[in-house]
Image 1 (cartoon, rainbow, N blue to C red):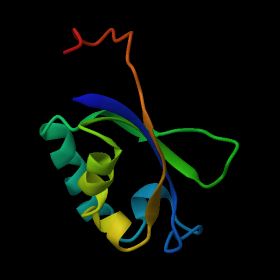
Image 2: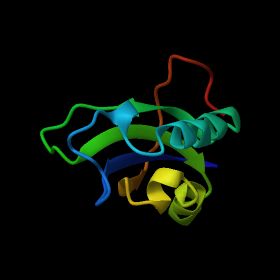
Image 3: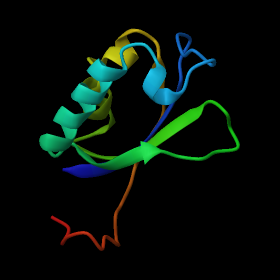
Image 4: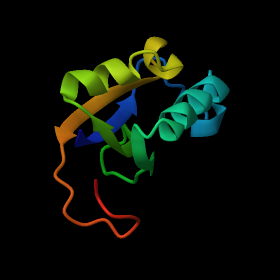
Length: 103
């Protein structure tokens, strides 16, 4: 398995008048991502500050390849409904990790 840095961005259905937890389908999206964490696919992740106002979150994801990452996220209710999009999926070689020994 490889690691990937995944950056999400606002999609066409993002409501700029609402906060992240007030977006449509928040509960379903949160359940979906919690399941990916439980399965070990999302290693860490969360909202990130960025000068690009479209950027929402940065995730460290474990998967076989970029296509597997995109397939993994495709059933996310926020992806399906256009609330968010995957902005970048970049292979990430992790050399440092103070949380636990790397596999």
